[in-house]
Image (cartoon, rainbow, N blue to C red):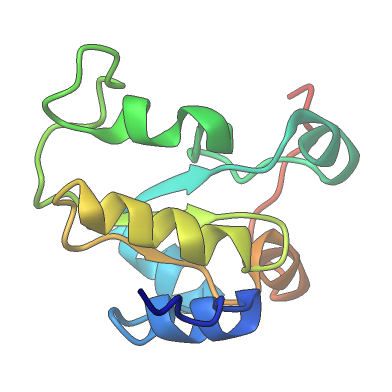
Length: 134
């Protein structure tokens, strides 16, 4: 039996990103303000404490994401109302969020996407950020 060559992370990112349209900071902000998107911050606590939070974003650490956003799940967040929910996953720089969005697609959340450039791009675009203690 032949064993296929392993896929590197760069190739995997390219592969999963080709299956959906990513979203930029301004577009994510407008979709959120219009009530058309749920922003989900998957950064770990130390980054949130260091850099702040996006006001109104749902904070779900990466290791809990699928359990909290599966509309059929027993541990779902109240915001996880439907498989039609448009979810914008936000990590620190836009890498882990791509893999997370692909995982949400596997759960049937077909409108899931991620923020190109992550939180750092959001902050650099001058979009709202509040201190983590606010």
